[in-house]
Length: 170
Image (cartoon, rainbow, N blue to C red; front, side, top):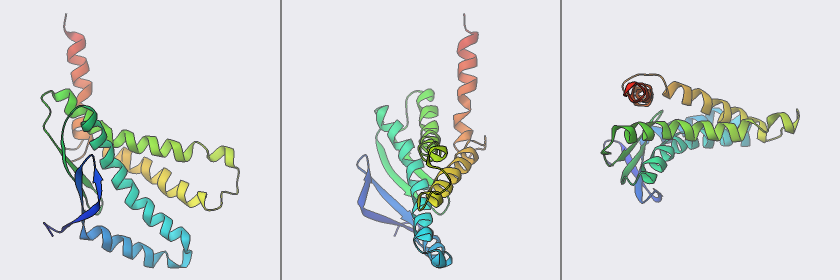
């Protein structure tokens, strides 16, 4: 255990090892206990919680990998994650990687939520998945875009300044 993170030996993202903080397991266990009366719905909500964090970090790793950057590790925490990758030579590439996690979340939310009107009022097991994975994904993605230093928005919104500076050049 390294700073509370445990290696998941069977899970890799672009050859990078994935580490999960012990608090994720504790929170998932508490969710399962809390949702026990809901049966399968509680289990699906817990899996969706874990998937949201993993999808976000996979988005960062995907963009970094596409840019030719090496992904070193992926860490999943209680309510956050960290994708450690090779420092890009170009600042614009760093901004692209910052957008990767949020765009992955928006993509999943769209895939889950857009079919809802077509399915009608009786959604069965898809309803809780759509609500939790879809709407919670949107909520987390928007929260990550807040222009704060430790969030993706702190880097992601710098793209506006980059485009503005390039536009003003003769």
